[in-house]
Amino acid sequence: MAVGDEEDGDRSSPPPEAADGADASESLGNRPVQLTQPGDWPSLWAPQQENEGSSRPTDDFLPRTGVSGVPLRRPPPPPFKPTGTGSASTVPAIRGLRRRKSLFRRAVEWMGLLIIGFAALSVAMVGLYRFFPPPVTLTMIGDMVGGHGAQRSWRPLSRIDPNMVRAVIGAEDSNFCSHDGFDWEAIRTAWRENQQGGRVRGGSTISQQTAKNVFLWQGGGYARKGLEAWFTFLIEHLWGKRRIMEVYLNVAETGIGTYGVEAGARRYFKHGADKLSTREAAQIAAVLPQPKKRSGTNPQGFTRRYADSIAGRIGTVRAQGLDACTR
Image (cartoon, rainbow, N blue to C red; front, side, top):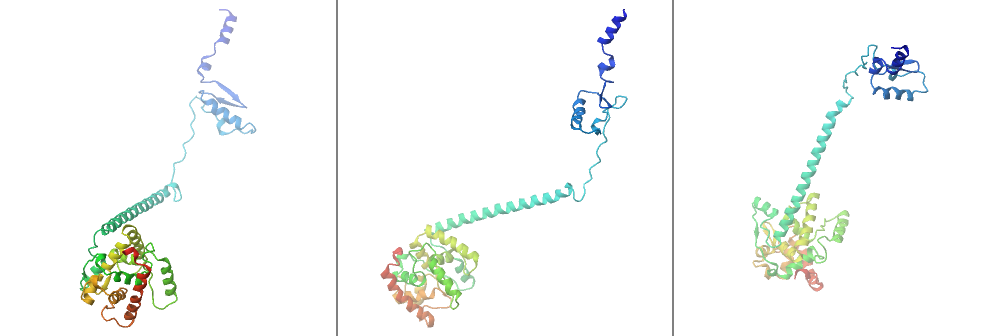
């Protein structure tokens, strides 16, 4: 073979080492860099572009392989050791916070279910008593437990003398037929008078007293007042004025262990509520604010004066038609 052919062959075919890429190298700046795989090219050139203005090479320019062609590996990072302020210490706190949120959510859900259940039950009870007499009240139960018994005879409103209706309207709630269960003007007046001292005056309407007597207990407190307002709203919308008056006159306490104007009339006057005179109706109405301390038979002192005042109001109620909603 000619010498020229050998030279052409040398120029046309690269040496095996260059073809395999094992010892091929290029120079970046003044430092040789070993190229092992095509994937090394981006990692080699990117740092060069970022560090063009710097004459000091970075660690990314170090050779990726050793002299023998074995790839160099960076040492592994040190093992993680959690400290008292690290993320590992916050795991119990996060779990505790989630647990408290879960308990709070459950409490809210249970409270909501209880409120919904109570509302449904109260509406059902009010709807039932729209057509049937309440069998017993908490006040009656208290008297029976205390040994006083509970005497009551239910009478429909049509079998109660109209003077009895007018007497309680004149004594307890002159705006009974015009308000929606709450007499706000009477409440404000009672509050002002109570603030000034003297005899404590209540501002409860007949509707409020009926709600308290049928569904709740005697006494005060914000909880009972709130429930009283709720039941007052219900009976005003589900019963109507005539039914409210009928229930009131049959469950109101008219003496120790005596409930309703029928039982009161028989206790004090020995006849039924359908035969009450104006004076007798006024005397029963005068007992209603404090039935355990007052008597409808021969009342004395304040009770007698109060009965006289109520007897005078009966004519006013009849003349002005303040009992029209009960007829």
